[in-house]
Image (cartoon, rainbow, N blue to C red; front, side):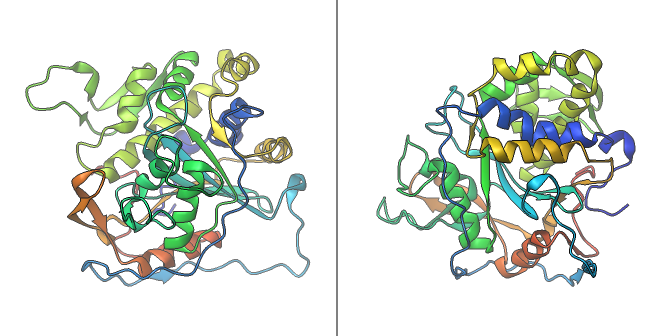
Amino acid sequence: MTRTDRHPLPRFGLGALFLCFLLLLPVMLGCGALNSVIPPTITPTASSTHTPSATPTQTLTPTPTRTPTPTEIPPLCGGPRVMFILLIGSDHRNNNYNAGLADAIRLVRVDFVEPRVQLLAFPRDLYVEIPGIESHHGITHGKLNQAYLYGNPGFAYFDGPGQGAGLLSLTLAHNFDVRSDHYLAINLQTFSHIVDALGGIDVQLPYAIDGRVKGSKDSNRYFPAGRQHLNGYRAMLLARMRPQGDFQRVRAQNLVLLAIAEKLLSPGVISRLPELLEAFRGSVQTDLSPVEIGQLACLATMFDTQKIEFLGFPENLFTLSRVQDPILGNTSVYNADFEVLKLYVKKFEEGSWLKSEDEWDPGLVP
């Protein structure tokens, strides 16, 4: 076991159904919907120039790359060798994708040769260059999650394909030299409704999370340590709150995803999946085609318990500062050395990861 959030079987023994929820369930909900906006693959632009804030220096040791086999193994299920899917959790409360920031940003690497899946979390408050929208208020930089907001129809600062997801894909390519083949976004209302349709979820928290403001008695925003049953609204709150910062929220989001996958394992829910899929058809935003959905569905049947990884950048690579943003005003952001972050992203693209003594584990208590 490594510190890239590979947990024992009780936590990650979800195999194909876990992949189905992360990819296939929302994709099938959105298949054929008017919400689907199909852009071409976003390829990296020339590397951007950053002036990073001072951050701690780390000694990085690449994990060993895989030795190619003498005979190249063809990809399974008629898919590509690797597919990269940008997963976006929108904070928009209405049942559409006209506005909203990206509350959750995951780049998913789907390997059709092994097969396996890796999910890399990007901090939403990371201060990045946002390309192609300088004509609007002179915007050249912003938080990573703002790229999704600016590209959506409510702002319409982006004229390229894919609306908000397209601009977020382009921003990742511009800052990290990483590609996104496809995207999938889900808003708050759809997320809550799906959890309720599953009958709620049971989350096991290793520590208490208190999202109440000072003096508040709102019990919905307090989550004690231990196992607890959550409806859609409270699951949404847990996935969004960040009383201890963005990295704590990423950890909570992972726990919520695991709880949803566990619920999908229950016999009563499995038998209702066709009904659930039909009920939420058209409620997500995606560009995956029926053929690609079929490839992912085929691959999901081949997974075992060791083939899904959650990855996150080491927390000590980031420093907090404040900037004056033309839309948000005075706001806090994360700064980082992008050349170091690119080393991690490059290894992720290759299906590997960098190790360091201080590597952040998304499952550790903050």
